[in-house]
Length: 304
Image 1 (cartoon, one colour):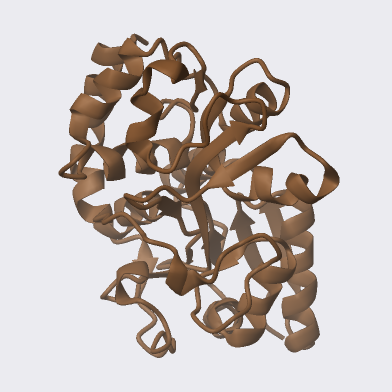
Image 2 (cartoon, rainbow, N blue to C red):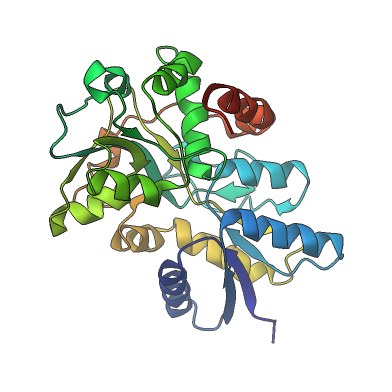
């Protein structure tokens, strides 16, 4: 009997448990053990295991493609060319089949229902009425905020001038997305950059906020899954990848309240259809290469 499949993930605990339960229901002969932490902590544990010559996990399910690009560059991911990605936008998948996006967690604009105007674009946050009223997560602590910064600064109509404009508006980037949501929902700030599901899930419960997919487009983290090159249970690891990118696995993502990455799967209530969302261009390999310079430039604008 092969050893259990070991999953290392940054999913929230409840999501990780639901994912494992659904997978083992579909593959009852596979036993799964899993450990969960933030992506930064997952990577730190993995580095320590590599340093000791004993990496444990078979499969990684973590927040973003840039982290996966880093692992791929170190030859730490196993290609899985047999994975069926034919239904997907190629931009969401590694062309060499080293990692596979499993959902779209986009960043758009949250606004308080008492805000002086409803924004339609990223540029609207630079309007005088928004002065001193903007919350945003810091790319120094949030992977989603890092990818958002890279995507917006690469946009021809926004660029680094846009981030300078946010600084001129008195914006003070702090912490992660949860703090941004609380600041806007609580009325401390009127606007914010935030991941979609936080406001969209709470609007039906009476939260005094709205959410906008801006005209220029949204960035996204895609919670990719990958098989480590040192995996010890390769058949089970491949089955896990197959499950997450299958229609059933994508329906699971929607049932958990996330925008599925696979076209044709009905999104959760409150989300537009995937084809109605404009995605900002994003090159994860280029983002990995420019990561240090981008963070330094951000610190120059906003301070550490």
